[in-house]
Image (cartoon, rainbow over all chains, first blue to last red; front, side, top):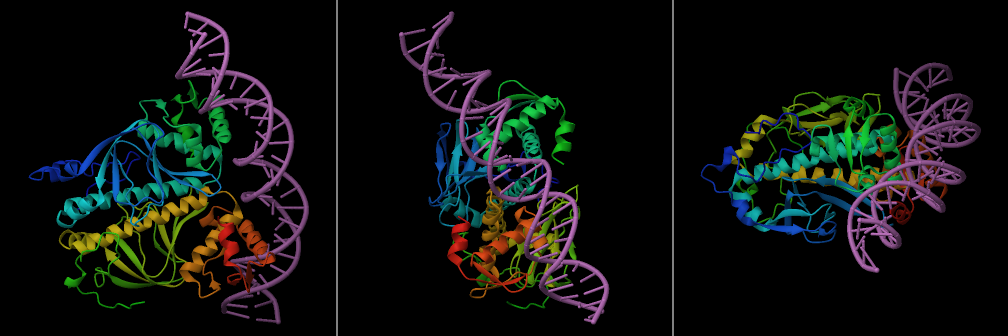
Length: 227
Length: 227
DNA sequence: CGCTTAATTGATCAGGGTCAATCGTGGTGG
DNA sequence: CCACCACGATTGACCCTGATCAATTAAGCG
């Protein structure tokens, strides 16, 4: 009874908690009712480290970043989440990570207690939560791999590929996040990210039009850069 | 830990089914007798990238490393697993990561299909799988943080702290893995790991006796190094 | 007791961080 | 509508940490 999601592509197939063909019949989307839609402005905090974990969320539209602030002021971005993805679900009583809106966002807020209650009796829900956890895990592992891999160009190339898959339209790509966000996600500085991009442009791999708009001229070059 | 020899179909203990606990509360092993115990020699491969995911595992004794081999020969270690921990569970049909025995190991092999079957009817099992996934996720996030954080000394200090917690006895610590393993886990080279340790010793933070055995003289110093 | 492999140490080099200046873009108000 | 401003991004110069190359030293192990 496992879903037949063979290899997981980058845009996570989180139909979780949505009425799917399999489960919808006879079961009127209980989670939809359990959640409240909320609008969040760009840059606003959704939840913070230390908060209690009595809620979790799903992105309806926009992009959310999950991050950790270190004692010396540095910030590490653990993940970005796009429409359809869950976030903010943690085991402990206190959050270890915070979440912020990269863009204006519309999100659904779920009460953990009530979903937890339903998960006990409704196997479809617990299964979907499990799927979510495993997919987040896979994504976190890919991220670790990315961070461990030396080479600034490799990292930036991998990042661009990740986002052509998530948010690319043909060869066009619009990055909604700042260079600082990218740097904090890749464990680099904004200067290095910027230099890598400029180098890609000089090499004819991408064509920038403004800092956040570009065309991917050679996907193959990016792929081989990202090894 | 607990030894288990039984390989018979699982007579599930009713008491293992959910008490009033939240999903955060770890429960006793509902998986107990559903797998077969296997012995693995040091350095042996347990499963490899590309294998199909029809089994997963639990460490009974010894230490296992989860790793990814890159095209250029570099190796990245995603995680180490010790007694009691599950590993090798993936959503896709093909493995993205491989697992190897760091030391001689005793592990339990579970058939994924059959556990999935049981999880459908036994909420305790699906609950435990979910817990495992969430815990692995948290661990992967900590690892990302470690890799993203610059500073060789910070990384090595954090690694030592991690293992004093996992395998330390008082101030004594025996590392079962090679410098290469440590380096591949931290995204450093063996030389840099070695230099950091030597520096710690010069600073009176640790006292080495052999490469893999040491006493932690100043836990506080390690904590502040790891910030 | 030698042989093999792991670990340490040293010398050098380069990738990327840091500091600083400049450019560009978008937003605001005159 | 345009000038100005503020902030983000780019570029350059320099430096420093950690990688690389190479040589010892230590440690297991038959």
